[in-house]
Image (cartoon, rainbow, N blue to C red):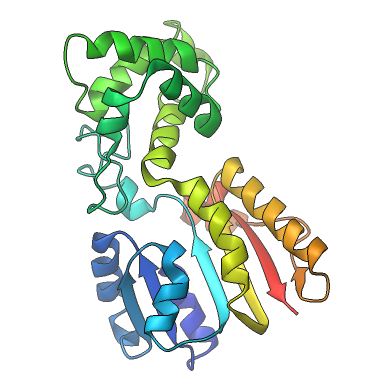
Length: 266
């Protein structure tokens, strides 16, 4: 939704349908973009349901589809949501609070093998098996309910000098992996891109901003597949992903990891 504010200055005729599965994010966006209320319609849903959403609005095709992936600063900084290992909170991590399965269910119900696989595949965590083993051991005495409880288990799975040797906190990759699994992020993204491309007008663009390598790899490979198999219909406009300028990173340090790729319907 933050990008919508910049789009408005470029073209005052834009009509935007803003989709977010986080109801709190929609409330915040409505407040921040109040001056554009006549041009933005907000929908509480997952972007994967775009075809049904457009149909319900009487819209066939569009000029632009913009995905801003991952957890937002709004969500990350809210201590109640459980996205950050730096703040004590219930192990939630659901972007859509109406979804049934939260991170607490995964941590306390998944098998040791499944936990290890998630930490490795979605977080790139090489110490995944030891972490999973220690989680299973901790579960024998009590339910793991909070971010701080999980973080302590993860920290104890590493050598005592780990944090002095490495800048990244030992729980970073585990929390990323749990968030991805909780929200089924990668599967939804991979299925969505080919569908979204079908809803672009001629000259329309699919713009995707990702924040970690797993997302970016899916975007890159799917864009390439669409362009190679439909050269008369789709064209990749970004041979290399666009990244934040030094000025933008100075204002918003979290933009450092952002990568933007663009696919055009010719």
